[in-house]
Amino acid sequence: WKNYARYDTSASGEILMHQANALFKAEDFAAAEKVYLKIPAEMRHGEWQYRMALTQYHNGKWNQAEERLQRLSEDKNAAEYANLARLELAEKRARRLLEEQ
Image (cartoon, rainbow, N blue to C red; front, side):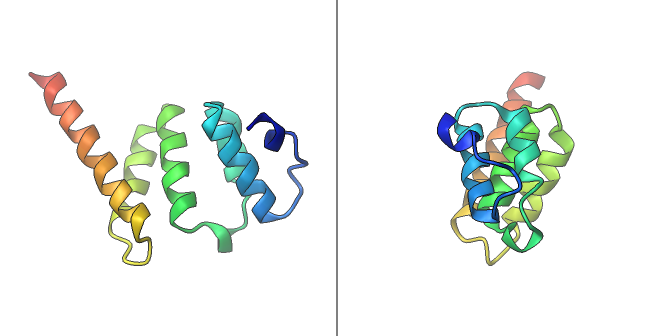
């Protein structure tokens, strides 16, 4: 995964997505977020939304992450990523309830 992280960030959107995903998998969430933000708007589909939300969550941007997951969960075109967003939201809500007890 670190090999993808070495690509020039001025490269095409597809290479940027691979680079950001590699950084995400390497759990370098701060660097991953920077690269995800460089991906062109037309490529910010379900996978991008999902990974960006998780990246924001790991970077302490919980409200932004939750809002992004909520929007994604309601997106009829996001298919599997909408389902993943719903699962992620349910897990986070369950965790919050357990912490309150």
